[in-house]
Length: 314
Ligand code: CIZ
Ligand code: SF4
Image 1 (cartoon, rainbow, N blue to C red):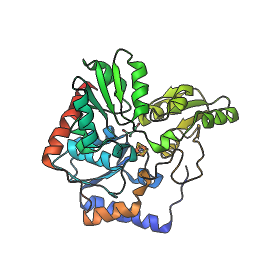
Image 2: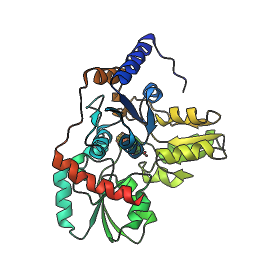
Image 3: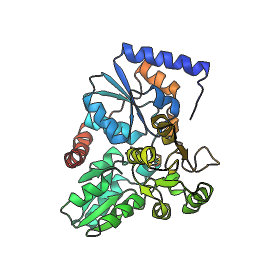
């Protein structure tokens, strides 16, 4: 996506560059961030890649351009670092669908079940999990568990995608979903396929089951990047948040990446929460060191255990 910076944005970038040098800071950005943020980031990746990158850095300050649960995960894995979240209002509606009290109750009702939580959960909910998964490693992690019964929280679509590949286990799903991915229908994808008959369709497992069923490939953001940039097809229809288009075009500009059109700013598949981080906000937190991610010690300690269990498996 060619994007021409305004004069103001160019000045903001100069300011960000000066501040990050002065303060020994790094900027980590998720693939769903605005293109101009991806372009100035030290690292662009999925939530786990970024949290692990944060573990390796010797920077004093980490500016995490993603939604809140991602900045929290980086903090949980790096408790001694200063993690700044450009806009604390950038949350994840799907993560907010799972609450601590309701999950606690569900656990009590199924004492024999193991709780598998998607990384898209708030820190307090992670404290109730036995293990965390991302969309990249979920099937592998769930297959490796001894338990027969799994409570999967919060994404019922990712949950049912996993369940199909792990039929030997029994699943209890949470009624959660990602609104932008849920709104993408199989009909929209098939319409695009009519327009581009030789295209391959790649979707994220957060999409609803009807979209997942007609796709040629289902995977996480980093897996979609691998598939779309290397598959033997000139056009790839991509069913995930439109921010990924920027990265796909940077990595392999010789292909045509078609994302379903959306009428609204927050719609198909456009996550308005992801877009709440802006260059302005990044410059502001770098300058004033505001919006630091602060979590209670006990929450961090408890939430770190299921994250570390996952890291040992993958
Ligand atoms: O873990 C992430 O970064 C998310 C939310 C999606 C993905 O597929 O990478
Ligand atoms: Fe949450 Fe969906 Fe937005 Fe990701 S794209 S942050 S899952 S609402």
